[in-house]
Amino acid sequence: MSPRRARRVDEYVEWVRLAVFEVDDLRDCLEFELEDLTRFPAFLDPLEEGIKAVHAAMKDGSYVFGREDLPFMDLAGKYAEEIPFHTLLNRINETHRRGLDLGGDDA
Image (tube, rainbow, N blue to C red; front, side, top):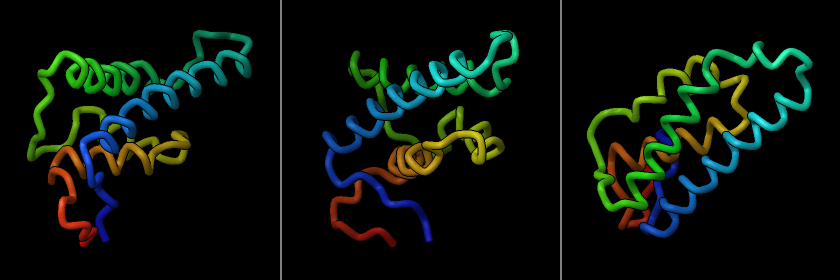
């Protein structure tokens, strides 16, 4: 079964905003937990950049839905166990690829 897609534009935008918050929160948590800040997981910077790029495109009006996965999804899949909000990223990606679920059908 594929992940649930957003049903409205405002829901989708809110998911992306939440992902920005979550990636910032993950960085903050890691900074607090790690004494040596050079030991951040390799996925963190590109994941953060990718999520924030989607958010920026939404804000400036250049965002477009696509048929392919968002660029950060390879990282999200590979490091899913280390990303507490990977389900949210899957939902964002599914909505990006397939568009809004206007009929309310998750199938």
